[in-house]
Image 1 (spheres, one colour):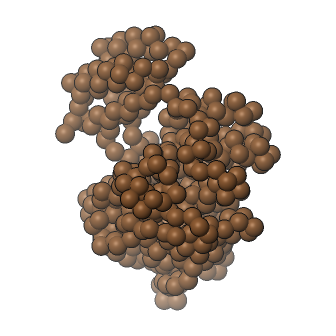
Image 2: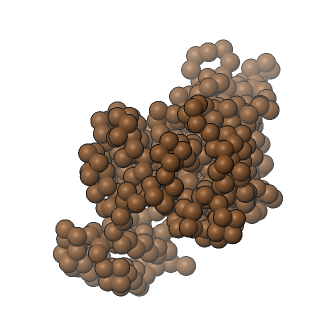
Image 3: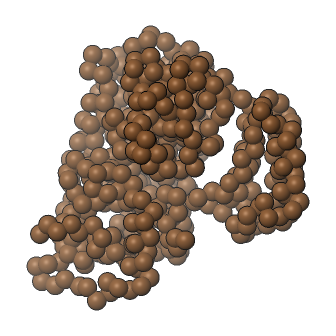
Length: 451
């Protein structure tokens, strides 16, 4: 069992264990030790989002990494996928992102990319933890000229903008398209508007004035209602909402209706099948994806492989099976032909390319998938008990599963980043599954609920 790392790096309240500057320095030291690969000088890229605590954790990581004789390339605020791209393009030994993604500003996190731009496998995260808690490297302290240096890379954002624009078909542009863009006051507040504007779109921006505490606050992909209203107000063609580190995206169509990750995967997968560009005619999605996605992809002649929740597990399955498209309902989309991790801006560009090539609006494209009614209820818990070992809860769940068999499903799982139990039901009758979800939630709350 891992002590620090969750499904997406180390995460928690900033300045509270484990997200302290002391632990960040230890994580930096352990990572630097692991990523040394025999060359005389080694380099690790560090980027962050716009959280106030990013300054504290960045300096601690830099100190830890340099203390092990490894140089640091500091790029400042840049989307998570941008760090992955810069890491591989600059041939650094690793990349570090300081971000808590869609969480509120008081949280922060640390996650790593290997030199090829992919997130670390579990075994490498366990190795970092083992080095920290065993204190095996405490005595390893280079001196004199062996200590690492820190350099600021001033053109990182520009490099990433060029990379993103090159993923858009050269024969197309966005001239005449009006886009509402919500950057969540996060890491993409500069690069995202630049990309769409340089491709010719008229961009109405929201969430591009970060102050350290307003990241994800009433804006971004967690609040699509904001761009929905703005799209209608400005009579835009669509709205694009990113999260704090811009590795996920949610859309709204020209009527202000939300278009989530499942719909985007359906649009892209079915189009790629037609274009003979979807490898093995297979899409990789998680168990949280709506059954309507399965139906749409199957109708187009493709199939879906399901994984556990978490974009890292989607990517691992894609690499193992040789697939090139995967994602999550929450808005993580991975186009392995272009980047190694979820990229909100890149995903938006792929959808815009389909709109331009087909001449269809986003609402028309989204008709490819008809979702089954789905309800998700979160219960805050004080402990991560296997709920199927609680007799009353297990009996209730099994009873509901029997009733929806063949026409729906029940999925219960713990969040990988928060003390939450997620209860998801899918079925033909929205009122009925909502009632059942509340019954399960209330029973779980009475057994293991926490403040």
